[in-house]
Length: 548
Image 1 (cartoon, rainbow, N blue to C red):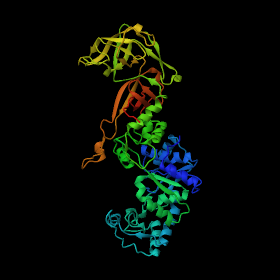
Image 2 (cartoon, rainbow, N blue to C red; image 1 turned 90 degrees about the horizontal axis):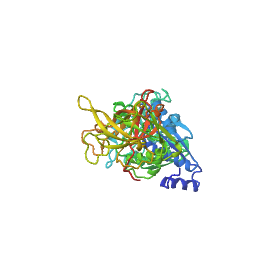
Image 3 (cartoon, rainbow, N blue to C red; image 1 turned 180 degrees about the vertical axis):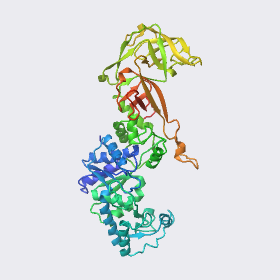
Image 4 (cartoon, one colour; image 1 turned 120 degrees about the horizontal axis):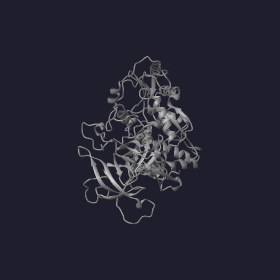
């Protein structure tokens, strides 16, 4: 799919036309410290999509410079998510592959008098940094000799110091109006086993130093990132220039994706997992790619959603209903129609022949006739939903109540004749009669009814579980003092309901998708479904007020 015209696309086009670059090379560079979320999907779409349009390439590179937070589990999940979204990377790379090169470039900076080993603690460095209106204060170790800093940096590498005892800082300008240029830390000590390099290293480069070097080493032409990194661009350019890299990538920023009632922070998402507010990173309520996949959202819907968002500098919040819209658009021609009854109420059709079962025909998908016909059993006993019956209904209630007649979807008119209750007065069964002449498709025009109910034949019905979701986080835009986002977790974000489905669905498989009459689109859950009990996650309801 061709991405609409935008400022990044125009830059790439001009660079190719002027001969600045003969090929577009981008990269998607996640840190493997959590699972990807829907915000990353936009970045994936932009990096892979633009490179593809210009016949270029995109590398998948893991910015694995912090062994304290990273894990191979996250590496594997990210690879799976990118592939599932439908993208192919040119090269699979790791920042840790370049640790020796990064170390040598840091040594070069020391030799040029542009980096020094500092003994200040993290808190002291923060205090020396200054504010947006006040310049920073130079470290007393800033005047260390080149020879001493070289010796100390090598000792840091050799493991002669503990965590936090020393750091390597770039020597730039402590009075710069851009705080990022006030002698940023570019190496710190971390005695921790790395998922890729094991215990080979005990010093690790900071992201702001490593990232531009990685881009330059790989020959990236356009380094695309969100606007939160815009004020770090001068440092990005400084590192590439002063480390004397042969390749000079261009950092370009675009607006990050924010969605209403949606957590877009890996740190917060990890907290939800660690504190058991959800049942894992792939919980269908999570905005992670794996959570959306398990819920039943399709990669096509996510790509179309990203296309509609476009590429700009703006980062305003997008209505969550917008993604739901593209899910419906994608599934309406793909998903088979069927009937599922939630919170069932038994109905006995007293004038229907006992022991008889007839098969009724119904289109698998009326919007896609090529999908064919399915057959539905009908007999004397069926289930309807409890909410489709009221003993004392209000005005304009058109479903079933004593003396009222409704149509059963794909079947007949039935009329409620008797209500059966238990000792506590709860309705447990309805006795109805049917009109044989009103069969769907028969052309009956004798009278009209205003209500149509879905149902499932009782003797062959398959027990099923339905999981309905609401936003995981209530609106926390105006967070009260003393509260954290965990205080805004919605306790009603998951509702589990028991019910029945049509017998032709007895062999459903995980990730099969259906449209249940009146309830919406559902996906067979990958974690809780068993041979005895399919579990369905509602992807989206049928109706939406969202307009493009």
